[in-house]
Length: 105
Image (cartoon, rainbow, N blue to C red; front, side):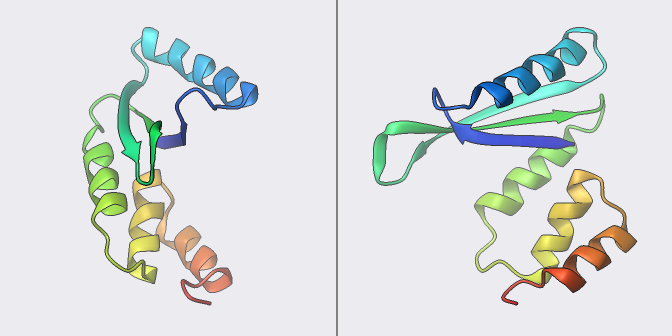
Protein backbone atom coordinates (compact mmCIF):
# COMPACT_ATOMS: atom_id res chain seq x y z
CA UNK A 1 0.00 0.00 0.00
CA UNK A 2 1.02 3.55 -0.52
CA UNK A 3 -0.54 6.68 0.90
CA UNK A 4 -0.36 10.31 -0.15
CA UNK A 5 -1.60 13.07 2.13
CA UNK A 6 -1.99 16.74 1.34
CA UNK A 7 -4.34 19.71 1.35
CA UNK A 8 -6.77 19.69 -1.59
CA UNK A 9 -5.65 22.20 -4.20
CA UNK A 10 -2.26 22.73 -2.55
CA UNK A 11 -0.50 19.62 -3.84
CA UNK A 12 2.96 20.21 -5.30
CA UNK A 13 3.27 19.48 -9.03
CA UNK A 14 5.69 16.61 -8.32
CA UNK A 15 3.02 14.89 -6.20
CA UNK A 16 0.41 15.38 -8.92
CA UNK A 17 2.79 13.72 -11.40
CA UNK A 18 3.15 10.70 -9.07
CA UNK A 19 -0.61 10.47 -8.69
CA UNK A 20 -1.03 10.43 -12.47
CA UNK A 21 1.51 7.60 -12.68
CA UNK A 22 -0.31 5.59 -10.03
CA UNK A 23 -3.68 6.31 -11.65
CA UNK A 24 -2.47 4.68 -14.87
CA UNK A 25 -2.16 1.45 -12.89
CA UNK A 26 -5.65 1.97 -11.44
CA UNK A 27 -7.03 2.40 -14.96
CA UNK A 28 -5.29 -0.84 -16.01
CA UNK A 29 -6.73 -2.73 -13.00
CA UNK A 30 -3.35 -3.34 -11.36
CA UNK A 31 -4.05 -1.07 -8.35
CA UNK A 32 -7.12 0.00 -6.40
CA UNK A 33 -7.49 3.59 -5.19
CA UNK A 34 -9.48 5.22 -2.42
CA UNK A 35 -9.66 8.94 -1.72
CA UNK A 36 -10.66 10.20 1.72
CA UNK A 37 -11.34 13.93 2.16
CA UNK A 38 -11.84 15.45 5.61
CA UNK A 39 -12.11 18.99 6.92
CA UNK A 40 -8.98 20.43 8.49
CA UNK A 41 -9.57 21.37 12.14
CA UNK A 42 -9.23 25.12 12.71
CA UNK A 43 -9.11 25.72 8.91
CA UNK A 44 -12.68 25.37 7.58
CA UNK A 45 -11.52 26.64 4.17
CA UNK A 46 -9.16 23.64 3.74
CA UNK A 47 -9.80 19.96 3.02
CA UNK A 48 -7.31 17.25 3.92
CA UNK A 49 -7.00 14.51 1.31
CA UNK A 50 -5.53 11.05 1.73
CA UNK A 51 -5.14 8.95 -1.39
CA UNK A 52 -4.46 5.26 -0.89
CA UNK A 53 -3.34 2.74 -3.49
CA UNK A 54 -3.32 -1.01 -2.91
CA UNK A 55 -3.02 -4.16 -4.91
CA UNK A 56 -6.40 -5.65 -5.85
CA UNK A 57 -7.95 -7.43 -2.90
CA UNK A 58 -5.90 -5.56 -0.29
CA UNK A 59 -8.30 -2.70 0.44
CA UNK A 60 -8.45 -4.00 4.03
CA UNK A 61 -5.11 -2.20 4.49
CA UNK A 62 -6.82 1.13 3.79
CA UNK A 63 -9.50 0.49 6.41
CA UNK A 64 -6.89 -0.55 8.98
CA UNK A 65 -4.65 2.45 8.20
CA UNK A 66 -7.57 4.87 8.41
CA UNK A 67 -8.50 3.45 11.80
CA UNK A 68 -4.89 3.63 12.99
CA UNK A 69 -4.27 7.25 12.01
CA UNK A 70 -7.63 8.65 13.10
CA UNK A 71 -8.24 6.80 16.39
CA UNK A 72 -4.80 6.07 17.75
CA UNK A 73 -4.71 8.14 20.94
CA UNK A 74 -1.07 8.63 21.92
CA UNK A 75 1.34 7.35 19.23
CA UNK A 76 3.54 4.48 20.40
CA UNK A 77 6.15 2.15 18.96
CA UNK A 78 3.35 -0.40 18.45
CA UNK A 79 1.44 2.14 16.36
CA UNK A 80 4.58 2.88 14.36
CA UNK A 81 5.14 -0.86 13.77
CA UNK A 82 1.51 -1.30 12.62
CA UNK A 83 1.90 1.71 10.31
CA UNK A 84 4.98 0.13 8.72
CA UNK A 85 3.34 -3.27 8.44
CA UNK A 86 0.31 -1.79 6.67
CA UNK A 87 2.63 -0.07 4.21
CA UNK A 88 4.18 -3.48 3.49
CA UNK A 89 7.43 -3.35 5.45
CA UNK A 90 8.65 -6.60 6.97
CA UNK A 91 9.31 -7.08 10.71
CA UNK A 92 13.10 -6.77 10.30
CA UNK A 93 12.64 -3.47 8.45
CA UNK A 94 10.33 -2.14 11.16
CA UNK A 95 12.86 -3.26 13.79
CA UNK A 96 15.60 -1.21 12.12
CA UNK A 97 13.32 1.82 11.79
CA UNK A 98 12.25 1.69 15.44
CA UNK A 99 15.85 1.18 16.64
CA UNK A 100 16.83 4.36 14.80
CA UNK A 101 13.62 6.35 15.37
CA UNK A 102 11.89 5.24 18.57
CA UNK A 103 8.66 7.04 19.31
CA UNK A 104 9.39 9.68 21.91
CA UNK A 105 13.13 9.22 21.31
